[in-house]
Image 1 (cartoon, one colour):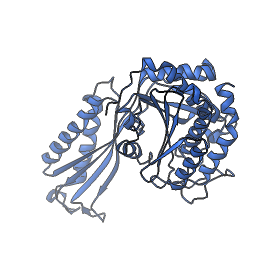
Image 2 (cartoon, rainbow, N blue to C red; image 1 turned 90 degrees about the vertical axis):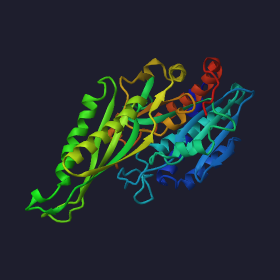
Image 3 (spheres, rainbow, N blue to C red; image 1 turned 60 degrees about the horizontal axis):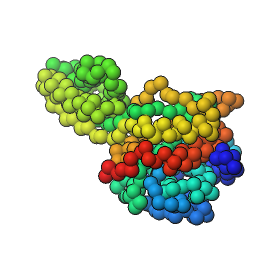
Length: 402
């Protein structure tokens, strides 16, 4: 039986699991029922289960001999969205929805575990299945790493997939190198001198200062960053302390996000932001406070792992089922936390249903649906990639960067 045929065999069970998870979504760090379902299913496959933190789950599938450890990760958390899909298995938890496909990810990885559990003799090493909480709040991966998910035994490489509403169901999309961006946050507090709006000359207007700062920040990407290095600075929040139309505020707060791919650009941008905000504010007679919070790391795919995924995927889907992305995304994903320590890669799994426009809606939309027919491809590609890794392991140095 081929890997694809094995995936087809587990299709109905995987869909059943997915629909249950979809119907009972749980928010970040509250995935208790989902984690229990995952642990019970892995146990039924005679896979060792380890609980990491309140809701993290890892499963160890030991093969027929000594060898490297290959990790596969799925995220489990849902979003605070009121579902409007009208599906018969729509969320029964008010205000919570699996609108980013993590129900698909979890069920696909459970299906992968089932397929590989029947092929232990082909595994010269160990497969670690990582079911991660709290991706949506961008803390789950780093928490699992701190909790030792890459240790005991040490993981040598890791992969993950993400459903994608821009590609036909069952196809996969690959990208070598940078795939997703680092996602950082910032806040700037501008303190001026408030007063009556009829007498602005007696004030230091923080709104005017903020307007100048906002305009200046937009020059960083165009004038301080190489045109060849992707970067985004978006101001998404702006508020003042004024509670009336005729009062000039004492202070203004603005905030937003910075997205980058390269470490040097990520390091340089906040320095220039603080320099501009401080200089402009002080030139108007105000004071500025700059707060910068580093978020998730960029997802930088290891070329060797991508080559293995491509070879494995082509063998089960055919060459026509595999494409390469032309450009990276400025979106963020906390999978990069694992890749700071070990080589790995993430790829996209198309979920567009030709006959339902809702499958083309953007992720996090209240009405988005995912074509379940893609699950077979997801299971088959993950499982075959794992088997290819053990056959090709000699070209991937066994390492743990710690």
